[in-house]
Every structure is written in structure tokens, then in C-alpha cells.
Amino acid sequence: MRFILPAGNKKLLSCNGGPDKTWIAAGASHRLIALSGEDEAGILGEGMNHSGQLGNGARNDESTFSAIDTAGMSILGLACGREHSMLLTRGEEADGQESTTKTILFGFGNSMYGQLGLGGSKDTLIKEITGQDVAGFLFEPSPTSVQLPDPTENVVQVVCGLDHTVLRTDQSNLYSMGWGADGQLGLGPESSTDRSLPTLIERLSYKAKGKELGRVKYISSSTDFTLALLESNEVWIWGNAEYGQCMVNKKIDRILEPMHIPHPIPESEVVSSVAAGGTFGLLLTESGKVYTCGYGALGLGPEKTQILMPEQITALSGIRKIVASTDYAAAINDKGELFTWGTCGQTGRLGHGDFEHRFVPKRVVMPQETKGKVRVHDVALGQDGALAVVEHD
Image (cartoon, rainbow, N blue to C red; front, top):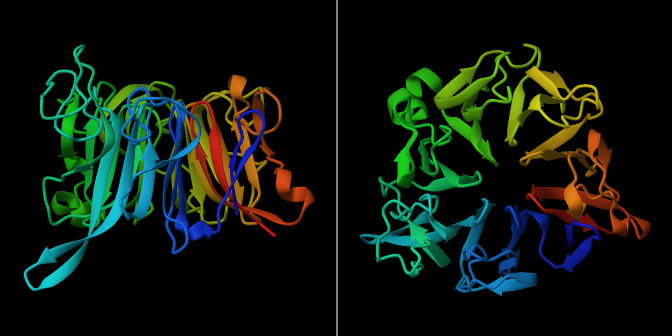
């Protein structure tokens, strides 16, 4: 298996673990890899580290992947924002005579907006957080545990926008923290302020709305808005929507609480996954089709860069996974082929060996293909680079 960083020349990292025991995440200018297995376990970080977002206890940038001390943690997930990172692990908690399995969430990196959920922000600097310096810059350079308001809940998914974080729990509740100016916290029409502790998104709270709405099964965020998919296959959105990515045939400056998107695709199709970019959103159907909506290089060709209702990207079929970042996207089909499209930038982040924008999805050619069959299992998109988990013969 290989990790591939398609930024200019593709870099390769080898490991022996299977793809089901590998997690990857990419922020604005940093990347994390987590391994969990008998032979190899731990986290590797690379890139910018000004805010301690690599979690290695320092603030020095790393040009190569270096180890992060995880003290035998059992990894369940990773997420990266602009300059912050979240780590989800499994732990054991004593409960009387028995031991119950709990998930433990850690945050590290920038916390100026409260995006780590540790109780401090630029507006409420507190001395208890070790990363405070003379200038009042707030950060945490080592993994620090995040507490939920309800200790009986377990986090099962964590996603990061640029400067905010959204959590999904095993009780199907959503919590958010961090920057809230665009409504990306989803806390209601009277709330666009930052939050420095995990705060319940009441509109989609299963405790309050369960019988009405059903459970949330997946969430996605990368920039300033969030998409949520319910078990009923309904799609909900909140946050920035000024580019028409809200999929309701109009532009909305900001959506301050979760809003249902009625019939975003033909009724014959069922949404199976969602991906929130910066100026656009993606929907994946059970039949492997991908729909896009919003603004940018949407995958529909150079003549169509703004749409207000979802349209199918006909260049893609048989897709099983979609991922979106601020202004580019990726998809993996059932053959294990990776496709990317969007703006490229000066890092070659689309992985095609050049710096050209792609208005239609193009398959990424992996360097190992000359040696045998290659299958891409996962991909993570950051603002200046991407990671892919690849298995080959």
C-alpha cells in the first residue's frame, strides 16, 4: 500500500497495514496520516505547523512526514481545518465493576475561534490553555481531550471547516464549535457568534426532533458550510450559501440553522453521500451518479460555472466516494480509479502533472500503474495538496 501526495511530483510513503486501518486528512497547508495495526500504529504529520496543527508539541514546519506521540491510541478518525486538527480515538472507561468502550476526541492547533472546543478563543483568552503567548495567540501544540456536554455520548464522526468543527455522536446529535459568522455552526437565527465549547445544534437534535426528522448518518464540511445526510436520505445544509451551493434555485447569503433541501435530485435517485466544498456541494447517489451545484469549476465543462440547482456530472459513473475542498473535488469509482477536477493552483494538487484547471473530471494516473494493478481506497483534499490511500499488487 502507498500514500500519495499529488502536489507537483507525487511522493510515496509505504506501510504494511491494510486500507481499512488507515486514515488521512488534509488542511490548508498540513496533512495527517494515521495507522492502526499490530505492526504499525501512530500518526504522521507534514506541512505547516505555525499553530501546532501537526500535534507534535512544537511549532516548526515539517517538510517530511514525522511521527506524533499518540501513546498507543486506537485511531478511529482524523479531520483537519485551516490550522487545526481533530483526532478521534477509542478508549476504555471504568464503570463500576465493568469497563465500557468510549470514544475520546482530541484537538490540536489553532484555537483563536474556539474551533478545538477547549473553552478558549480570541475573545476569551484563558491562562489554563498552555499555548497562550505574550501576543495572545491561542493554540494547542499537542493533542488535548475535548469534552462533550453529555458524557454519555460518544463522538462517531468529526469534520472540520476552515475555522470550525462539527461533531456527530452515537445518539445522532450534532455539536459545533469555532467560527460562526456565516452560520456554519448551525445554532439558530439569532446566533452567528463564535463558540469555544461543543454546542448542540438543536434543529437536528435527535433528542428534540428524532420522531420528526430521524437520525443524521453523515456530515461533510471543508470551508464555511455543512451538509448533513439523514437516514431518511434527506439532505440538510447550513452556513455560507452565497454561491448558490444551497441547491434551492437561489443564492442565500448565510443559513444560520439547518435547512432541509427538498428534492435536490430526481425522485428516482437516492442520495447516499454528500460533500461540501467552499463554493459548491456534491451529492452521490446509490446508483453511483454525482450531482453538483454552486459556483466554480464544477465538472460540467468550462461553459457552466454557475448553477443554482444540482446537475449530474455525466463524465462520472460508478462512483462510490466523493470528497470536496474549497475549490476542487475528487471521486473514486468502483474500480478504484481516482478522478479530480476544479482549480489547480501552483502545487499541482489535482495530481495530473501540471498546473491546469480541470472543468471536467480527469482520472489521476498513479505512478505504480506501470508495475501492476492499482486501486485507490481513500482521498483527502487540502488547499495546497492532497493525499490518497492506494493499494497495488
